[in-house]
Image (cartoon, rainbow, N blue to C red; front, side, top):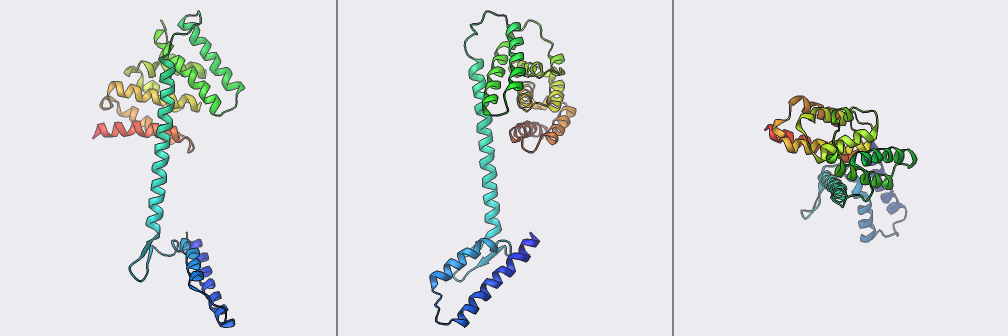
Length: 257
């Protein structure tokens, strides 16, 4: 900011001197009101780096920095709304698929879940990151949300610590569909350590579902601290995951009074 002030102030001064020189050298050259207005308009955007505000005769006043702050705040709110809408849309798509008809495949829930885990791994291996892959992954997750409650035996805690992404995603889907408060610390740990962005997104939504089920006031302080650490570890560009975490932490802080 200081360097910009040092550059802009001399430029404005030089511009004013230049107009004065033109007037002295060529007095017959008329600088009409329209020219002066255009020159003022050209200078106005740069004055914010020099002044908080400037008041003109008649009471007109420009509040440069306040206006800039308001614009930035409006842009931030718009981005928050966009992210909220995007996150809600993703959850709605998953809910729609998960509530659909039973699969026509003649296979058990265990077989279907195994197939979906393999499809998830294969999809990530052969398709580059992008909207299409994300959409197909959402279809897989939605099917897991529908199927995992039907599993006869499923070691959720073991799946949360698995080295296989598809297995971890299955655990997130199960806890998203059927929240279990006893597994919240393990789920938060898995979400914090999750290396797959798509899986971490749904792990955090599973965390939110479990917290809603047990009540924010019943969450242990150690778990809250781990969630705060998780927020610090989320990459700067991962705004959707950061927003989900902030929403969860906000509900916990509100419950804590």
